[in-house]
Image (cartoon, rainbow, N blue to C red; front, top):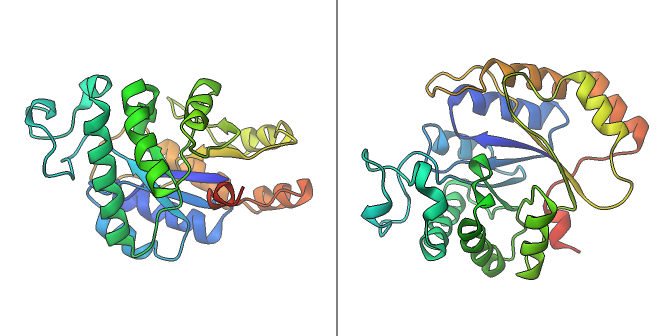
Length: 242
């Protein structure tokens, strides 16, 4: 599964993700529902494999009952204090964001993941897992500890995970080839990625790097390499059929 994070974050980012889904080898994406481009992104992405990119880091909460004591000074989400959020608060906000996704997109989410991997915090993971179990949706796991916890709660998850974002572009053509050569022979692997055009509205440290990733996933060499390896990218719905 080659999943592009941050759909709806910014119009430029959205355009790049949709291009990677329709013209490249990216097979899945996750939508931010409380970001500048959420509505337009959802309308353009209908019919594609789209999950929820739960956002607890910035922007306004979706749950109208989100407690005031957990808002930032500008009325936004918990931000740096997210690790202290009670599981019940996370559960309510995750459910509200999931319901908004379904309204915007006009279809069910394929899975759940979290902006900036904030489900590394135990209470965030627990709140998210409650919603996932109720909705019957898989959740991204980024390591063995998280994978074990999700499965203990009865939540489906990927077997392996590859991906990062930093000072330099992560998915270059060279890294794509090396990751494909190292692909485990068994289980379901998620490759997290961040393709896109330059942001037009938001400020993000991962900006020009997105264009490098977009080029990688649009390259004919990438499609050819997948075909030669006998690998066919899919989406998280395969986990629901297990």
